[in-house]
Image (cartoon, rainbow, N blue to C red; front, side, top):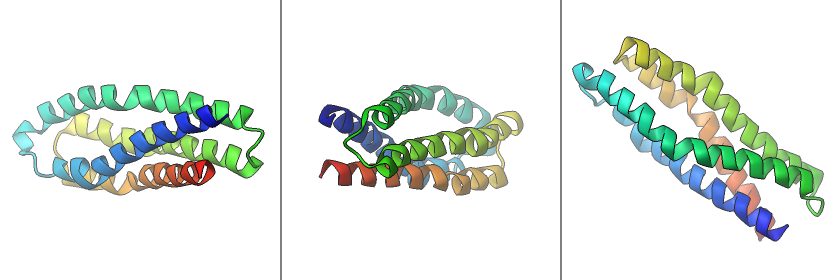
Length: 140
């Protein structure tokens, strides 16, 4: 099980670093793109970020499920809590972030939609950060 815990920690560390970069640098930078260039910028962002995010998120979901199922040495709260945090990140992604991205793809530059994207990204940021802390504590 130590290898499974380490795998989960590595994936959580990657996604936590990525989401903090998105939260503090990338999403706020959307507001600085000229409106006439925004549609192309957002299209390219959506295509490129998928390569950086989707495979690690899928791997993390599988590893978190495996850890919840096989982590008998861990407390039930730790086993299922870490999986719940992954599910919270996924729910936040598809219920909060994706609709704002769809709006930006459909309507182009909108400061209100960009601000909404930044504000509603906090649940993902906090879920991954909390999971990383939990897994780090379990490894320690």
